[in-house]
Length: 227
Image (cartoon, rainbow, N blue to C red; front, side, top):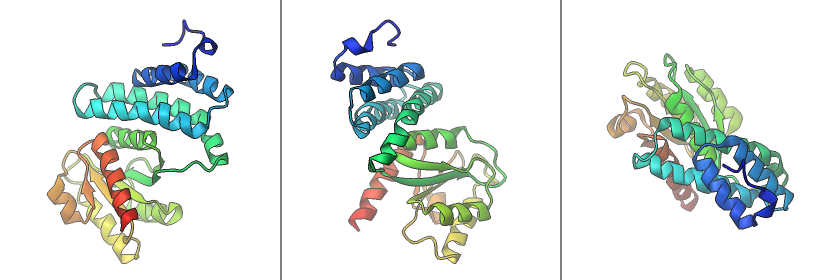
C-alpha cells in the first residue's frame, strides 16, 4: 500500500512496481493514485495500461490457475484494475490505443448465476479486451441482438446448471441461421460443461476457468488474424 509513501518522490519505474504490487493485492485506491501520478508525469496511457494494469492481472491470472490465489482475491484485484482503467479509458479513446478485441458475454436463459461469468468478464477486460456484459438469464434473441449491435470478435456464454447449458447450442444454432456464426469466436464455460459438450453445441472452445478463457481468447484471436 502506498498510504505512507510520497509518490512524487519515487521514480517512474518504482511507480510501476508499486502499481503491480498494489493491484495484485487488490488496493483500488492506491492503484488509482498511482495511475494519477503516472499520468501527471505524462506517461503514455497505453503504457500504463500494459505495463501496470494488464501485467499485474496477468500475474493474478497465473497464480489463480496455479491455486496460489482464489476467487475473492481475484475479484479484489479485478476491482483495483477497473479503478485504474476508469482513469485511463477516456484517454485511451483519444489516443486510439489498440484493443486486443471485443467480447460480448452473458449467462444463458434460465440461469441466474453470475460469479464465474463476471470473473471472466473482469479478467478479459484486464487482459485488454473491450467487454460488453449482458448479465444473467439471456434469451437467444438477446444474444443475437447483442452480436448484431456490437459486432464482437468473441461471444462468451456461461451456465451453472445442467438443465440450462444446452441453451448454448440453441444460441449457436440461431447465429448460424442468421449467418452470424462465421468469424465469431464462441467460448463456453460453467460447471456442467466440458470439451465434448462444447463441441456438441458448436462452440469453438470450452474454458474451465477465467484464466483459461483469457488464454484461449488470445490464442484464437491470433489464429483468426493469421488465417
